[in-house]
Amino acid sequence: MPGLLLTDVRIVNEETVIEGDLLIKNGRIDTIGGDLASRGADRVIEGNGRWLLPGLIDDQVHFREPGMEHKADIATESAAAVAGGVTSFFEMPNTKPPTLSAAALEDKYHRAEGRARANYGFFFGAGRDNMDALMQLDPRTTPGIKIFMGASTGNLLVDDPEILDRIFATATVPVVTHCEDTPTIQANEAAMRERLGDVLEPRHHPAIRTTEACWRSSSFAVDLARRHGTNLHVLHLTTAREMALFEPGPIDGKRITAEACIHHLMFSDADYEVLGSRIKCNPAIKTAEDRAALLAALREGRIDILATDHAPHAIAEKDQSYSDAAAGLPLVQDFLPALLDLVSREELSIEQVVRKSSHNVAQRFDVADRGFIREGYWADLVLADPDTPTRIDADGVLSKCGWSPFEGRTLSGSVAATIVSGEPVWLDGQLTGIIAGQRLHFAR
Image 1 (cartoon, rainbow, N blue to C red):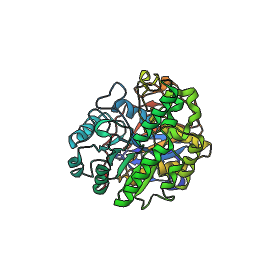
Image 2 (image 1 turned 180 degrees about the horizontal axis):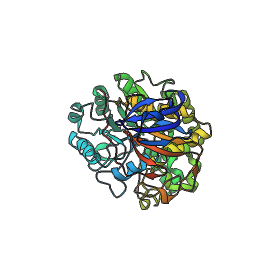
Image 3 (image 1 turned 90 degrees about the horizontal axis):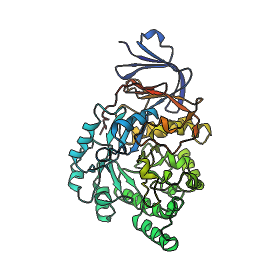
Image 4 (image 1 turned 90 degrees about the vertical axis):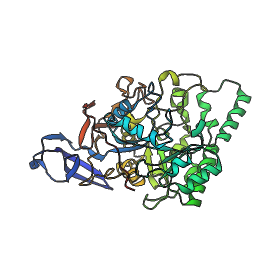
């Protein structure tokens, strides 16, 4: 049957790089390698020697729907995602209403159907009073349970040790955590306000949301997971100290895994002087030494997964005084170009990027038939150009918020094409108009 042929590509997959063609039929990878021009495909994308990678699976995004569509929605943010090489995303539960019930979870899947350009999964939120819903959760419907162990409000802030102990003891899917200790943060802010009054600035953010605040929470989560044998994934780590909590080496067999996000690898506290609240996020961007420790941990396997924590806000919500400025950055469109920038600086290898942003995510969360370039798997692919830079300007931002923390920068690589479930959704710098995202299946 006719299909889509990718010619003259360097296929980066499972620690190898091979040259040749790749043929897609019926949305899945049919044949890998060799000269496949005679196979009769009706569409051809010429690779011209560029890297062909499995599409990125971003396990941490906030697309703001339902309830905050003035910032973002599933349609706009999935468009930005495919422009950034992301073919699948997992979205977080802190929407309005939060995703604390099976009905709320299915509502999100319904909203994404026919609108998401990338494949989609939605986390189930842990609250202070939804233990019954957690106990009845179908493990095939979600990548995992998200717990805000700090840095949240209302029912989504779960910091009661008894509730946490019960969730960790009974969870049948991976538990993913935002780890910051709220009492430590509150005490730090109160002490700083007593000393400085109401003149706090963005540069004070890491002095409020400190290494100690992160360590107290993340070490508590790891201790709980070890006690109960929980499948734990700790999100967006930021400090050198926390690296000691995690074992180096391949992800195979690990029950406790760790993640770093792109902004913590690309910025340091020196950038607050210029970017101010534009890079205010939780946990905070910290020192250059912390950034270096994160990169070292990625290389040695203490950190298993790369993500964005894409969290868009309207520019008016960011450009306020420190205390009023919203925390979070839009990042999905810049994800692969930023990773290629790290590769160009030899801080990561392209094989490490593929492992941490595709293979390991699929493996950690039991994503069926995606995350690898294998015959028979869904054709979620990205054609990456390491030699053509990406200039980041506000005019090119596809996220509804209309800005990027990388504005004015040139990143040392670009996304030439993104293919979702066998369909080209981003090609030659433009959306193709094809809506190809599918509901992800979790093989449990």
